[in-house]
Length: 358
Image (cartoon, rainbow, N blue to C red; front, side):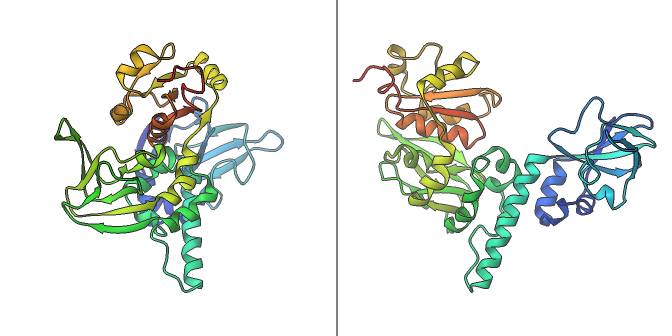
C-alpha cells in the first residue's frame, strides 16, 4: 500500500463531509491521504475500520455481509459517497476486485467538526431571525489557532461539553489590540481569559527587580487562565509585540464554561489506583517544598515551569497533579488539559490528604 494527497474537491463529493465549510475542508484534506490497495487484496486485514470513516474513492470492492450475499461497491457511485458499512450494514470481509483508492478519516474528529459547525450555523440563523448581530465566534470555522481542528480534538475545547458550545460562541468577544498594549499586568486581579487569533505577545515577570522574558505567544495560544483557575493575582505581565486580534472571555463565563469541564478532580483513593496502574504524580510546588514533603514517586514541575513540559510529557500517560491546597495544581491541571494531556487534580491537595500544614 502507498499513499497520495487528498484535495478539497474529492472531500466535497463525500457525505456528510460535504456540508463543512471550504476552510474546514482544506484543513481536513491536509490530514488525509489516499490509500492505494492492489487487486485481490483485503484492504482491512492489517488495518481495520474501527474509529474511522473509510471511503472508496475509485475501483471495485467486493464486500461480504454476515447474513446476506456479497455486494460490489464501485468508487464514484452514490453508495460510495458514504462511509463503508454505513448504508448496507457492517461487512465481515472485503476483497479488491480491481486496484483501489481509499480515504480514511478519524470519526471522532469528524463528529467534533460537524457538531461545532452545526451549532455555529444554528446560532447565526437564530441571530438573523431575531434581528441580532451574529456571535463573535459564529464563523468559528475560519478562525485560526485555537479553533483549528487539531485543538478541537486535543486542545482546550476537546473536552468542552457540547451543551456549552453555543454559550461559548456567544460569550467570547473579539477585540483589536495595538503593539505595546498591556493586556495583563502582574499583581492585578484576574478578570479575562484570552485566545490569540492573530498577532504576538510577550510574557514577562519581575524577578529581583528586573523584568524577565518568560515566553512569547502567537496565534492559537491562550493566556490569562492561571489567575482565573487558581483565583490568585496575575503572576506575569502580557504585552502585545504586534498589532493583533484577541478573543476575550469574561471570568464569570470562563469558570462554568471552560474551567470546570477541564478540571477532573479525583479523590486520593482514585488517584492511588491510577498511580498503581501507571499514572504519574506531579508536584507543582516550589522545589524547596517538594524536597521535604512529597508523595512517593512524584516528579517536581513547579507551576511556573509547567508550560515547559508541553511536548515533553507523554500524552498517552495519565498524570495526577497536587500542591498544598489545590490552587496551584488546579491551574497546572487546566494548562495541561487544554493542551490535550490526561491530567487529573488531587481534590483538596495535600492539606486534606494527610500532608503537613505550614
